[in-house]
Length: 167
Image 1 (tube, rainbow, N blue to C red):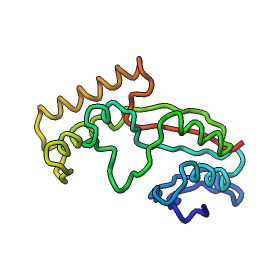
Image 2: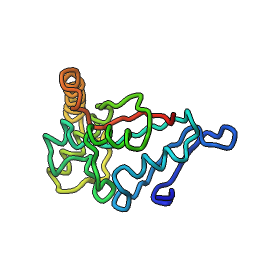
Image 3: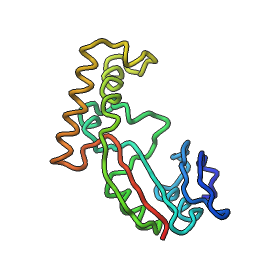
Image 4: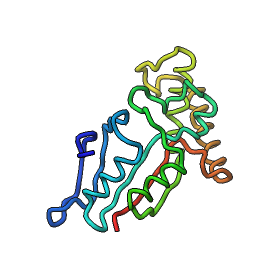
């Protein structure tokens, strides 16, 4: 992997070496599961930070909506990292893991979009705000439910968040 399988969209330069990277547009189908983390470690300056946020296949939304879950987003997401796999990959890449957790930050958007996919078989471009007060209430209830459940089951959130650094 040589950095051509993803696009670095921002970095903070310190002494000619990247201190922090944000990567997007990962062509996951062409990238080994742990390859991106190894490449990020390679290009980071010692002490540099890495933040990875990715949809979580073990989320509450996926459990409810299954093939209609908005987080699937084919063909954009071809690989999903269970929490355990992301932990193993970060260790194999030689990164120092500071945080690995789930978040329900996107739950309010995941819910109505997954409902539309279930109903119509696809996602339309209509605005979330134009779906009426009942949908806004359902969105909020789903997010609050996920937040409450995440206090009991740490792995319930819609996304995985990894914060790591190069030692």
